[in-house]
Image (cartoon, rainbow, N blue to C red; front, side, top):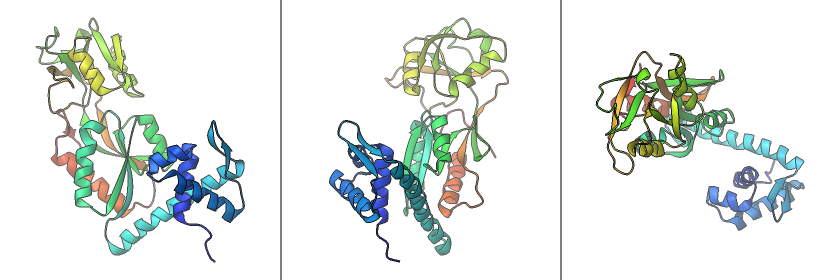
Length: 311
């Protein structure tokens, strides 16, 4: 049977279907808009269906048939990518695409070094990365948009596998002139009368609040931040203390102000960093190589100042 379409045309169609416009799809996959437009027109002619409704103000909207076509097209692309895994298994080599997610708070400390070393060891693997919050990363794994994600062991669904890499206990972040900055450890009771700069991200907020709630206390939240760098800057400039698990190698805020990192006294649950992926009976050679690389890297490299590696 002679195929009336190419995988490249399908790839362009999926990109537009997910983006909602040719211009945005062009930016995402780095292909010219005319090439994408021509590919979609060819698909519509070859299959004799209308995939999109053209709306000048709102861009492109999938027709009912186009939505069904998109679902099948994504499955087709996944099957095609699986051929790389089959080839790797046959030739006992590691090559092909790998889509990796990383938690937004973790990415600045981990992603660059880990990805560089992995691609150095496996030059025939091409990696794409997705930086997002915990909830979105888990959704992307479930939708097969990423193969795996470096994230926390918080609210992991039953259908997702989690391989632990390191335990990170909580600590208190302080400006150099904070009243508690000279303490060797800090009891959570000592914090309640001081303003807090809360890292306000999905699941992270609940975790840090639980440290107070388990002793019947409430923090005095003075400010919130949705970015670790912003939180470190606000703490360094005296807006309050911060709580975190990810500890950088240096003791400075983004603008170069001194910070103190003091362990939180007490038996508090650490967060566990690991690799999340779909539970499946089959794991590709590329995924196995990435998992092994993560375990070796976290064992041999202290990514965080307070890291405790797990077995």
